[in-house]
Length: 555
Ligand SMILES: Nc1ncnc2c1ncn2[C@@H]1O[C@H](COP(=O)(O)OP(=O)(O)OP(=O)(O)O)[C@@H](O)[C@H]1O
Image (cartoon, rainbow, N blue to C red; front, side, top):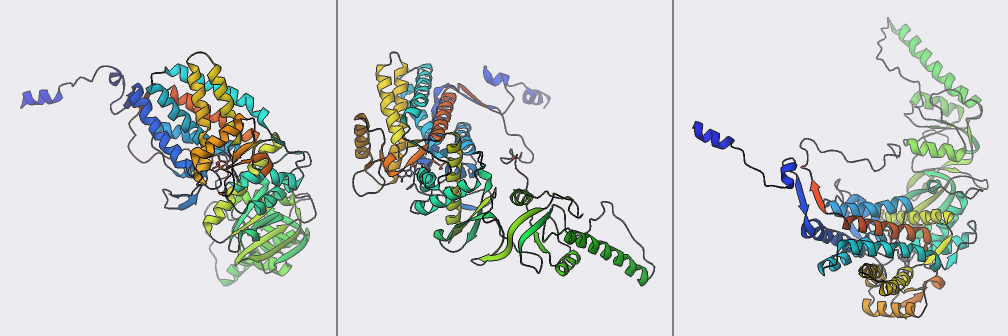
């Protein structure tokens, strides 16, 4: 027994090499097959999944997240946010696409598709024996050249940021790619809302275009309002106020309770009555003091005490409760008020002003409207209507894409031809560059050009067009110098069109960032030689980083 015990405890030598250095349980992958090809396959699968959602006729993805919430969307940013990817390389690709979404608010699918195609093409070159360094070098040269060429391909410049019609024309493709069919109506609405909140100095904050989704009705019932709309009810009996002064409190509407627990012992009913009488009187005095400062509307961020509400009703005050601190901050911005932290009479200069505050009903949803008609208001609200929640989500994504593209246009007003025209124009130019470049990197440049062609090909495929025929015609027209030719998505007539004339335009800044991110991601992933994965720690699941770390908790 003693002998067998010694055998049990005998040291089992680890295999020589890296495993000797690593903690037990660490997984590591090296060599082209293990560290690259299998991961490229994962990226290819992810890019292929997003490819079918690319463009206006892309198909929806039905995503059910870890909380069981069902989403039906074509928006790459939403799909990737909800998927819990395990593969480390696919996670990096998704991170690049999400970075594009966060920075530009559009072009997330394009990043994933282009990076996926670049990795896929790199695999072909590696399998045919090309050194990795030559491929990376070729991709870097091609990426730089593409970024250099982009400004020369711009076909339109937004002349006036305040011109609603011009803005609507520029946003047509960004809005239409998410909700094909309604783009004429929606782009007009998005353009109006963006122009309405553009400051006189020409600065634009996309947060100032608020969205309020109200189920019911049709998409064309959506409308724009100067001010804010909240899906809530008023607390008071008074339901409307005109030219009202507004006091905003981020505390409950009632007496503040003490932090420490206190016990009051009453000796008899008279003492108890006197106690509650003083409390009631104090509360009444507070509410009267607010009304005496000529406030007509009180907005509170916390619980509404029924007694305080009784006094407010007697004085004719309109009381609204907003549970979100972020919404309260935005309302302060809209009406020009300073939020107060306790129920004191509002000091001079802290009250805001609103032309009309009223309770209304949209469909069967009660809404409280703070409306500033005719005056310059920093915030505009788009009331979105739609029959189903999915339609409302798609509407929201389309509007957000449009607003973000307007933000990009405020920084750089140049527009590129869309519908795959820019990608094909770059592909043709890079093919020429590749053909005349000496050395092995020419293969990298040529494959970069081929990868760019996957974007117009995806548009054609999703539209049900004959892909090879369309791509051949597109390339031939580009070879003839018609750099604005893109894919015509409707099946009638020719499969190509002049994107600049048809008003299918993409912002230069969005495209620039997308190419930059995709190239960078592909070259970074190609430079991976080993993958080392630590064993997952036991115990409770580690909570991931909060993706909204810079937002208020209740946003
Ligand atoms: N009417 C149209 N005809 C042809 N192409 C169009 C039309 N409208 C938009 N497009 C093209 O569709 C592409 C954008 O598609 P989509 O919005 O699905 O991708 P994305 O912006 O990369 O992704 P996401 O919006 O998910 O971030 C652009 O290249 C645009 O030029």
